[in-house]
Image (cartoon, rainbow, N blue to C red; front, side, top):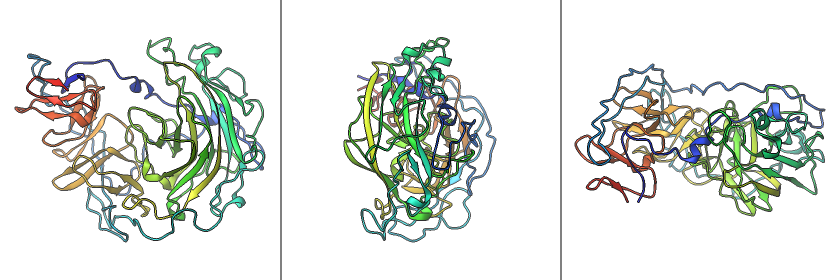
Length: 473
């Protein structure tokens, strides 16, 4: 039997995943990158822009207002539809149907202007097409622009919560008050030596992802300061001064990326893709298999193939593959135990094939793939769209910008709303249940209309609400 939560009423313990929702560190501060062009000194990195406005959005400040609150009587209590704080501003229209067989489909959503749509499922042979798709680093871990057909250039590097830019054990974990012995570290590649050795075509890392302990101030698990160990490379950073550049994959016909891994660490790996601003944003970068439960990516030993449509932010931000900055392999931490790991990545190769039918977005104004949800069909959207917020309003697909659990699109006011306070989690409308604010640990897929304005939900997504007994089974 799962936990039962009426709308905006009651507080079950926050799930462990919610503690991971802190800001992630700036790797440009935590490590030194190097390449054939010489060493680049660590800098503050680029500042997030707070989300892309997109070409089709229109602003709005929201109307505010308070919820009815409901009555607390009865088994579990019945609540009203809930208060909605000031709108977070703006929404975007969909860019047309992404399930077609190719060509352009006229955009249908929001305040979009001009054509939307996507080109899907046509052209290109499966597997590697042409030459120059392999991203092969030199002996020092540098990928030269001349080594591949698309001028991808950048160094491999590593960083960890327990290692400072100079390679000493004085990183963000220690800065948060934890002893060095409790923090995540890597021993190979050497933290004190510039570069990342290419060992027989393999980029290998050895280290320990720490067991997460409580923050000395908040008393909660300190995932923000103890985020683990990460290795990765940049797509457009030729060992010169920041800011890093971006790589536009779709314009080059790149539909994804693949690589080999020899061993999967006990804690798993999150294969992350950084775009401007997401490095430091809530929940960290978008990653393969990302969700609010923060699972590891669905890796297996051998060759793994990732399409851009399979990458999303933990809180719903769709990946914009026209703005790729870095690719990371993060070994996350957990509260149960530390993870001593050693694994190697090799054969990183761009994919240039048709991609999964119906899941490839190619038009520059609508690069973000969002699956069908809350009555809205599979579609391609503006950059910055939060796929978790996608919904249908009078037959028109709408969504909010940015990565946040707190925003939903309100069809009544035709704008995005922001949840806070007693109900910090936004759930889109589902069936006859309108979009509204809920307790932080609710599983939005379980929200149920029990009649008479009584909306209920469960904390366990595998259970459903029994309106007769007000329990989750």
